[in-house]
Length: 191
Image 1 (cartoon, one colour):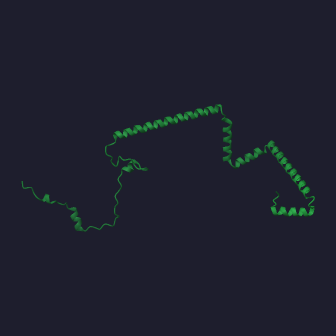
Image 2 (image 1 turned 135 degrees about the vertical axis):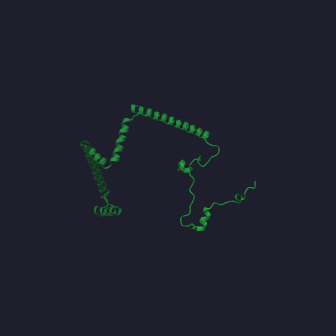
Image 3 (image 1 turned 180 degrees about the horizontal axis):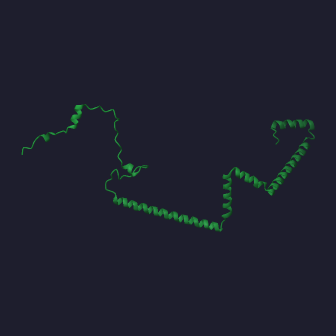
């Protein structure tokens, strides 16, 4: 109530019992209760009067404006919500237009979906007639994330880093530069 804990209230009750006496203690509590009730009613009446005066003078509107300046996102959302609720009423012209627009959107969505399925069917038929009987690497569909060019390219072979091969000697270079002859080519035809 006044920031008093249970122990403080017990101490006040014991002191009141000693000072006032057990006979007059209930009368004291009754009159204290009546006094606090009157004080609360007066405080509520005062706060209502202050709020009414603030409404009449426009202080509440100023405080709302200040709050909206502090949080413009919330203010904008509230204004949009208010405008939507005030304009769209069941049976109003705006509600009729909204229903018509929704129906038009649904028709457009259906038409677009139908056109897409027809286009895919035509493309599938064209691919089936032009596709060869055996699939090559170039005709297979690329994996996800690859283009057709990168999927058709063969992977490069791993090469040894330079400097790891043994250098050729002069004799090996000469032998490699001469063309090799086969045994059949050396035999001459007797005819």
